[in-house]
Length: 163
Image (cartoon, rainbow, N blue to C red; front, side, top):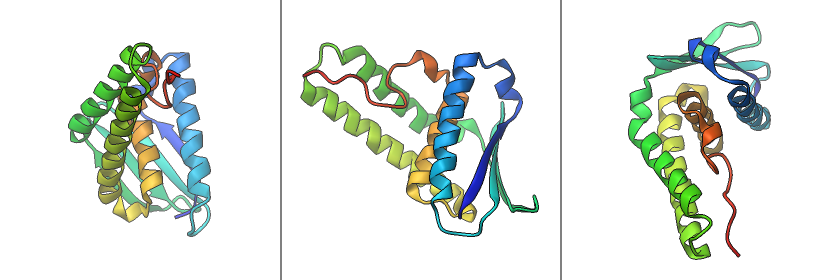
């Protein structure tokens, strides 16, 4: 499924502030870099369109012919997104006061939810040939498209762990 490029577009991006666009671009670049390492035909492009009613994905070949297309309504991610963000918010609130064990348990819960979301997206995008890691990265992009994650500590990384 080698993907040479990931492109983001859609009306939701119009009102994003600069920091949010930079964060989204960083996630897009990480997905793109990872997808280039996968086996498969060269020259494919993954296009993600962020609209209020759906997150659209298209896989196109080097000649821009459509290979696969899927629209995922934001509410299809609702429960996973809420659970994921709830864990992240708890991590960001408690990371100063919690024991290392509590932070590690929350971090593990975050990974479990991220994996569940990745598996759900992998099934939904089976025509795209994504592996679990690529699908997890798509979920990270989706999270940033649906929520201003620049205002949430630790959403795309690991919070400070107490010593």
